[in-house]
Image (cartoon, rainbow, N blue to C red; front, side, top):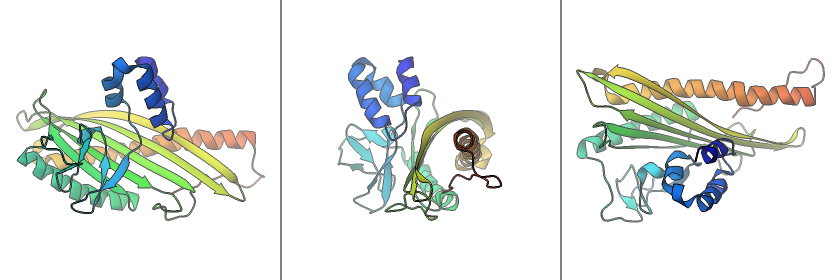
Length: 258
């Protein structure tokens, strides 16, 4: 199992679904563990009731149906699908509205979804914040025109412990999957993809509100992840390209930004 997870961490997000299917065929007895621990590129579908797009993942799945955060209904319809309590549903609706504003400000578009459910084992609740941004030139939301294809998938899962004397423990696990392809006459084709995962835990006062606490943690984590991606993926790629094909003297090599 450890070797399988290590292999998936090294796979390109564009090939992860094919690789996971192969591993499930090789390790059928690890089916549940693989599906719960391996993150795949996010998929988006429209809510048939509201017309709004929402993101599919393991956290809003029950059997072969997925719950929309907008209508709170499953697609395809599911009679006994798991639903959050009325209190958590109210928090979920507010979180989706706030996170949509965050998405537009930081990502200039894209699709976001938030799902919240009870944590029966620890007594608190769990919240999953998802963002998918398609930066492709054709059919996507890329506004700068650099990318032929590109996608940013962010998954933030926050485990919130029970309120103990006005304080709760927040455990955040964040995963970002990035893929980008350029293709132009001057530089030819170029592909860069990868994923990164980080965790952080904080004890925070619940007086500020759960959404405020979770939002600050996610904002801080995304900043750290962007810096890591810039240093590890873009920085190392720039170094390798300059080593293999040094640019003319006086010209600074810049990777496209989107």
